[in-house]
Image 1 (cartoon, rainbow, N blue to C red):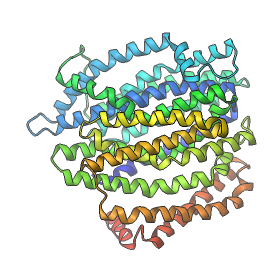
Image 2: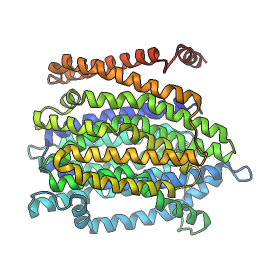
Image 3: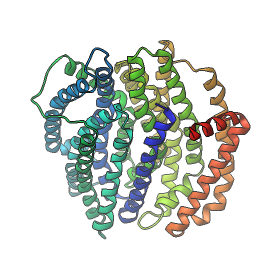
Image 4: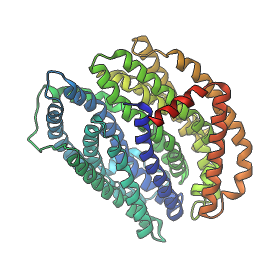
Length: 522
């Protein structure tokens, strides 16, 4: 499968989801603002998102997809039916675990919320009880999204990437409807309705995946739990993969808890809004590449195609740098006008915008490393090595905790995002070094030539945007149309300068353009 084509398919739908997510966040900022109500909802929303990243989309997918592909690709096996039989066995264990986990989390919502916030900073008993109530509303989302991850992993493995990539659109549409149709003058009521909407969206996502599986001939039966060698191996791989796949999320949870405890109300919201903007390129590039690379490399290694797997990793790293470097520079340089255009109206004032932009700049320092983690870890998971990434993730989490405590007082709301960025960069360095040391990855001549030139092109774009944003500043506070046009001009100008700079530096050549034209014609 053409890597760029598959990334475009996933990335296009992810782009639609992220744009809707920004619309949702803009409406949330307008109706709820930055204060205790917004912080409480975002903490409640962080809980299922954390477990989703750790166990569902992270650990489970990382362990399940290579084993599923091995079953399907086994020349002596039964192909897809053998893979689906294994999937049924996995479901037989996953479903009761999810039911028990959901019940336990509902019962323990108070201590879990306390751990996620360290009790908040200066809140009374009623306010904390409100945050616990929101957590109880969002917890069922964990079970729904975990089942979505299982079904999505199967569809990804048969090259139906778009179905799973489209699922998050339902989440954003549901929350947008809840904001438009059920907002209130009281931010607490609006926050409560958003929390209810989260679990409703999870049920809709699961329904979407079930219908898509049936349409693609994937049918699974519910059966009694099966405890065989394959299930034992799956569970053995899941536990270490949980921390490895969710390192960034764990770091964000640590940062959020420290901010909730030590900083003023609204700081959690600044960090969340900044992270949402940072997640736009991360979702388009990192998650898209990770979604495509893991099953692709798994199939290549399963077929003994070591050279092809190495080529796939090199091109994945090249694509990541091509798209990530300019995104990081743009978010650092233009964070102010971007945050103002998207969030700066209603209850979200100019001070909130400025602090969100500062947090965004700190997050964006680590944007390349957040995405490179998604590119490098499939090199481990495809070989069913989930222990090495978890070891490095634990080290990075320790660094994140220390950096949080060191930076949060002098840098306030910028401290936790910068700590997360530094920890993620260390994680990437360790992952890359070990892959090279084991002979599982080596930069080819093409990547060595292009990487520094892409960096130069991104810097040139950043210089142009630094001067261009001053011209756009008066227009990011107007109507929706004016704001949108201002952002479109900034993005288009930055893209044009970057494109020209890649040609001037030789990072992207005329031969590449000719090759792209021939592929499109074909």
